[in-house]
Length: 144
Image 1 (cartoon, rainbow, N blue to C red):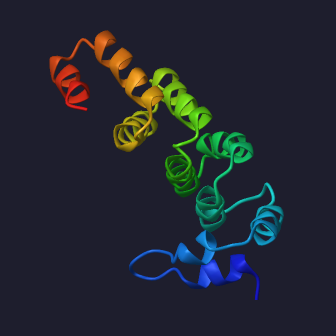
Image 2: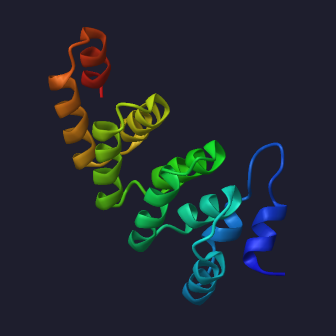
């Protein structure tokens, strides 16, 4: 049974068992990335986010624009999983800045940045607060 199959079968009421992915050797990790490929479903996106590498961020960007809301949510979760990588934080900032027509993506993006301990995330939130016309938003960003 492949790592991906074990991960899929681990989904239960409490979510997936990420320890299946966390404890992989480098060769098993690479095999999982290759197995997942570029045609991902909800479970694959979550798995790939937890494996987490710089090269996967462009894949998550693609799925954030998918019409399937479940894939978009999984991609945003995957970005959050790799948000310690600076390019992920920068992309999340772009997501907030340019997705004014999609409130769900903006809210998810702000939520991700608020939980990430990364100086770039704090910088993006400060900029967002300065440009906000809503005083409550400024307070919300300033408490970080």
